[in-house]
Length: 252
Image 1 (cartoon, rainbow, N blue to C red):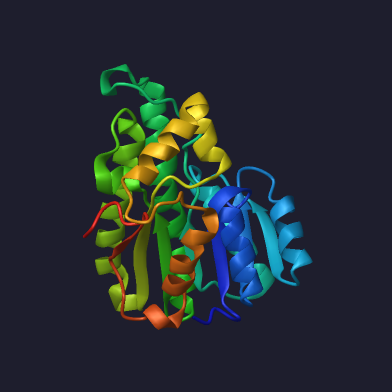
Image 2 (cartoon, rainbow, N blue to C red):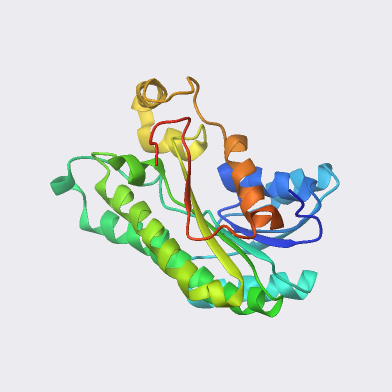
């Protein structure tokens, strides 16, 4: 699954899945653009220690101008853009609860970051990817959407929208040889998961694990294999798909 020489822009790369993806892609020879609204210097340092190349850029996915600036910096540094991984999402900062008790501001913020944010980044990145003759976009959905997670309807709905966005965009961009796929992981052992479930984290992770065919909790590194495959040319005839990386919770 060669990604050597490809330039990959990863949103939400300051920590968690995004940071691990930056490390893995850089170790495989890709030029990594670590983008986040938070400081990505730790990610760049981690990549550098392993001999990889990474550029940190500030990115607010809810701002179309910020997304365009991030892509321009990526192309300016590495001369090309081959792939976009839309990993940034509002998760840990959200508060769950019954659907009719969710704050309207939380609902709007979830849609703004998790859905509009991907739209903004795709609009910014597609012209640069198209210029290379094609490439790959990988959107991060969630088990919340494929299973139907209760008591977090704002997050669940936003991640379901990511699947619809992926399918529609795959049809639009096929003529440009740009593939668009999604990954739907179960609860990953990250800071965001701990923040979202708070004092119920241990119980939540135990419940998730109990529903899986593979009896262990997902780690960030478990997601990056599917990411690498979807960015590599090994998946060159795969588009519009949502790959469940959930230990065998939802079978498609």
